[in-house]
Length: 79
Image (cartoon, rainbow, N blue to C red):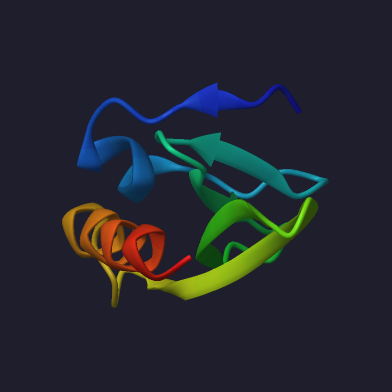
């Protein structure tokens, strides 16, 4: 599946499961990972000490796009 960009909260809600997991990118490393079983996870990709890392920010819809962006901003201040 082709990775696409999130432009509105409704895109996260309407994301459907596909045969393989895929990502809906937001900005500054934040993306929504959509699994084949339909579960949706917010993840943040970042670099620390030259190595790529990934941070789990929560599960959609419990964590909305606005909350995920807030958590991303907090994490970027820390790392």
